Image 1: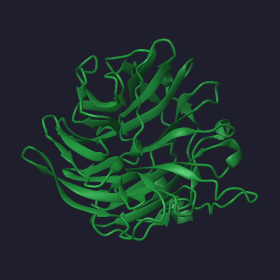
Image 2: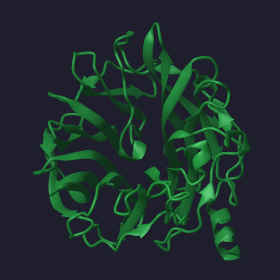
Image 3: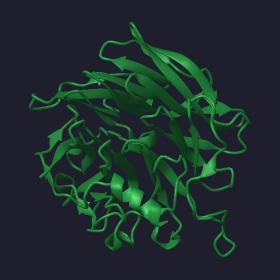
Image 4: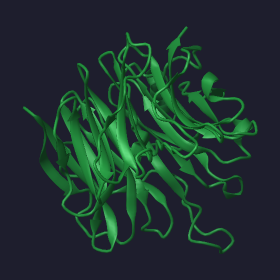
Length: 392
């Protein structure tokens, strides 16, 4: 245990380094009391930085039906450029990753299938033959993976595909389920991480135990996956004879350091206070260790929501989520210190009166943190807001 703590400390950035935040910008160009943007997606991959360009994806109903959009902002621009519509019919849960040099890959669910597109300029590619949902993406360099929940008989199971760049967009190289057997119950909300050695880690919500348990699997080459293991070290079961178990949900993954992978999810093991944020670490062994509670004691007595983990090659690692400890939902951030997560700090523009929630975030190559969230006003509608943080 001491050796693990030492290795985690080596990977970690100094505790709670101060952040200097930019003034917030509004991402979406169309607002109104009857327009509802959504940032929900598998692994919460809704923001990416490619070169000096930030890209944000979301879904809203401005056209009368749910459609997916991408907006970008070059570093030199004062505001986000007018958004590009990605979908043609009902669209849900878009994600985006960066390939560098101003290129992105976006993916989304539309018309019961999952799709991906290289941007700018690429054609849309349908990835699934069967019905599918909840797609997410991961990449290292030009190597790209996608994972989604694909229909397999009565239930969904997790499918992983390797994508290749072509002259005019994307192509599918391999597609296979993580488990060959037909699912015994629902699997969904996959998270992907691709480490520098080319290995692929996938986590997901799994109901084979009749309540939601995050499961995880690993592949050296993205083709053959190990038998799934529980991400949680809490052997959940019925409480006082009630229910099948306390449950945990929405795992997120991020590469971290040179070989590590970090996980964060929402966990109801303390069922009286609702969901808490928990984390676990794979330091390169391709096994996740002991679970660590993320939020501090001031967040103990209320539910946390929309948690994610964001790591960088230099060892920086932060978790974000929203909770209402100050009376209304605010976005909170906690940084890994090497032994524990530090005190929770609010994102300045995403706290205070009103409702700020649903955070997304990513580190860029220079170590700046780019954050996106929803800012709700019952009269004016909902804005998607963006700010960048640099270490002082």
